Image (cartoon, rainbow, N blue to C red; front, side):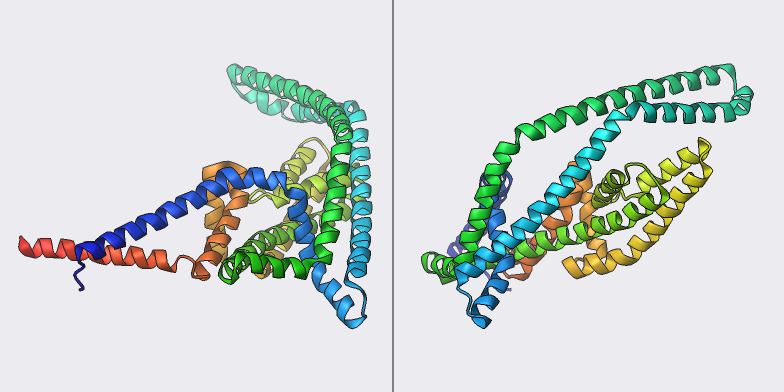
Length: 384
């Protein structure tokens, strides 16, 4: 074991403290500085991501078909955004129209819910007769609370739909301005994508640019891979739920399927958390056929998702299922539902950065400090 001099030991510990201080500064920047900057420059960040996707196709058109790069970028940006905005417009129209229709018919839906609860109450009268009087009073109070809660929820839902629709309308101007900036930025960045990269490398220097590229690729792999996997699974839920509900004749099938896809996007929860209680409620309320259909749909999609999920998540993220489960659990415990979403992303970023050898010097410092402390303790034991 090598014995360090006082000067070597001073340099070793000061170097480790410097690395720790730099790491803390990076964490603070990520927590307090990056989110506001991301919100401020969001149109340009998303424009850069769009340009990264379009750049290979623009380069191919430029090289193989001798298309001027700016013309190819202009045509592709127009085509992509025309299709994208048409899809968004159709999506918003369908969602808003179904939501407004649902809000308008909330009273009839409420009457159906009350009828189902009354039916359940009648069917369980024989059980209530067997229970003590105090228990029956307690159950009546619970049912009254449920009635009041459902009335409150139905009223709040209608007010929420109307107020949010008005709020969306007032924000159209701001959204249109951001969309215009997004489109223009996407075109300019796509047209000058290679030039921007060359200039960035020239101004930053090769070493810093390589580290920047490594960080960009890491974030792209982690964020893109994870969200792509989750979006594919949510899309899979929508593709299964919407036709099934529509064929059965369920009202507001599109809106319900969209809600189930959103629930499926959230970690751990899944569509069964909605379909199973809904199915049981339908069976208890006299709708046995619909209840059985919902339970079969929940079970079938659960099995189907469990078969498809490992392949989709594994292919998109490369994260081991046990590590993914641990990161989701820790994130859920630390920060709730957002922590469960961000946990796997942070884990993938940390793993990718570690694989890139960025922390090699820090790890080396920690090992040397450990060896030095162990040597000091060993010498003290020998002296005793």
